[in-house]
Length: 185
Length: 185
Image (cartoon, rainbow over all chains, first blue to last red; front, side):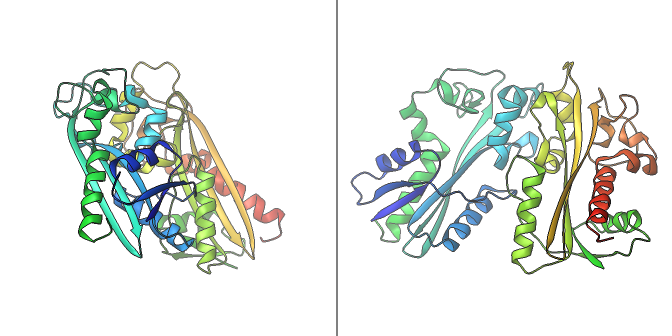
C-alpha cells in the first residue's frame, strides 16, 4: 500500500517511513495546498483538510497538524502555534507566563489518515510545562521552552528520546495501532 | 437594491443601514457559516469567504473582517485578533508590549461586497498606538488599549466620534465611494 503524505515538509515523510518500516506501507511525499480554517481544535483543522482533499479526488493519504496548548492561557497558542511562533515567538510566550505559577501545557499532534475509503483520526498528547527561560540548542519552535518532565526541555533531548515521548511520536503510535486493528497493516 | 449582510452580529446590519441611509440600499441580516482560513491578511480571509459564499449560490451580499496589527509584534494579533482577545486578552497584549518603545499599531477592517456579479473589496485603516494600560469603559475587544491619537483610547470616545475615524468607519466610507463610482448607488 502507498500512503501519500500531504505536507510542505519532506522530513515528515521520512519520519512516517521509519515508524512504519517493515509494515508494508510505502510513504510518498505530495504537495497539495489545502485550507486550514480558524477553528478551536486541531481535530477540526484536520477534518476540514481531509474533506477538502477528498473533494479534490485524493485517496489513501494522510495529513497532520500540531500545536502547543498552555492551560493558563486558555489553550493559547493552540491551533495558531505556527503563527504565534513566527510573530511573538518563545520570548512572547515567556512574557505571557511571567510570574504565573500554573505552567502546565500540552503539545498535541493530530493525524488524519484516509485509507481505502475509511478515515482514521488520532491525537497524540505530550503533557508538560512551560519553563522559565529557553534551554537547549536542539529542536525547533517551542521546544526550548517546553519540558515534558519539568527538568529538561525538548531542545535538550536527543532526537530519539524526544520522538519516543513526543506528541508526534505518540500520534504515530496511535495511528499504527488503529491501522493494525482495522487490518490495513 | 437589497444587500445581505452575512454575519453573526446583527449590530453590523444597523451600522451599514445608517451609513447608507437614503442611498437606495436595504440591508438584510443573514447567517450563513463560512470558513475563515488561517492566512496572513484580512483580504485573504474575505476573499476566501466570498468565494465560498458565491459557490453556495449567494449573490448581492457583503462580509467583513477586522483586526489589530501591532508593528513591534510583526502584525500580531492580526487576523487572529478575535482568538487572541478570547485567550490572552488585553492583559496579554500589554505584557507583550511591556517596556517596548515602538507602540505603533493599526486597526484594519476589510469589507468584501458582491453586487450584481461584481466584487468590491475595500480596507479601512486606523493608525494609532498601544497604550500602557487599559483606559475607558466603552467599546469592546482591544478598544481600551488602542488609541488613535496617542491620548484617548477608543473606549474613552463617544461612539459617534469613534465611528468617524475608526477602521470600520473608514472601510464603510471607501465602500460607499466604490459603489458610487460603479453606479450602484
